[in-house]
Image (cartoon, rainbow, N blue to C red; front, side, top):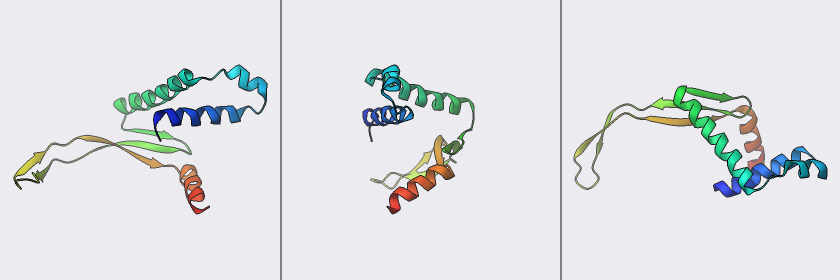
Length: 108
């Protein structure tokens, strides 16, 4: 799913919050607004992870920062050993509620 498709999903979910036309009209949600919401959401996650090692969102999941160890890799062409520096990577673990919903949708 690309960013534009995700923005559409966010819009649809927001519109589900209000079942009446008045709510939909008051929301005045367009593509630009959706893009800003999605950008803000991901920027916020990134900002927190720059400062902290973990971000937990209850019932949704947790982002963790893991530092890989230095290791020796190999050049696939020559077989020459190459040192690979340690780096930080982001890991995500789905929370129980999200995992259950995904599992349920896969079994249908």
